[in-house]
Figure 1 (cartoon, rainbow, N blue to C red):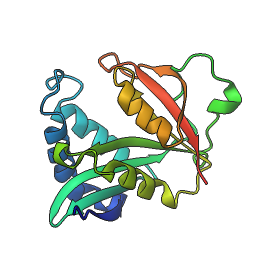
Figure 2 (cartoon, rainbow, N blue to C red; figure 1 turned 60 degrees about the horizontal axis):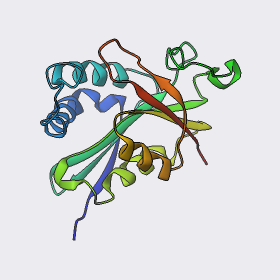
Figure 3 (tube, rainbow, N blue to C red; figure 1 turned 45 degrees about the vertical axis):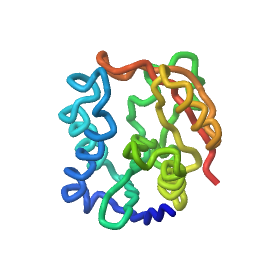
Length: 179
């Protein structure tokens, strides 16, 4: 039986977590056709560095013994966030951020051999378990309908699409209420 232990970290651990997060990313994206572009280690390092500097950054890593098998991290959206700017048709009231309204789940990633074990859901749920924000948001590659369906099973609803970077995929923007 698979036993994955979850551990929570904050921004004070970012430097020591950087390489393990990058290594897990490399394994998860080893088969990506865009390994030299948007899915590259270098590009992901920029995201890890940027997100882990944000106030309220939270990270949960799952371990099978001493081996890290997956992670989830994110941070609250700042009042000046560009998160919603490329999503057409949203009410300004919906996109108004205070710094404490919305938690953005930036990454949920599980190494291939631990997929379909419930580990992703456990990481995600633990990440959001004690969050004080009223809602969570995330982006899912629109070319991956099975992943979108998984997030819908977790309570997310699509609110639009966004291509936040010129070299990024088009993402479905999803939102769910937090208890």
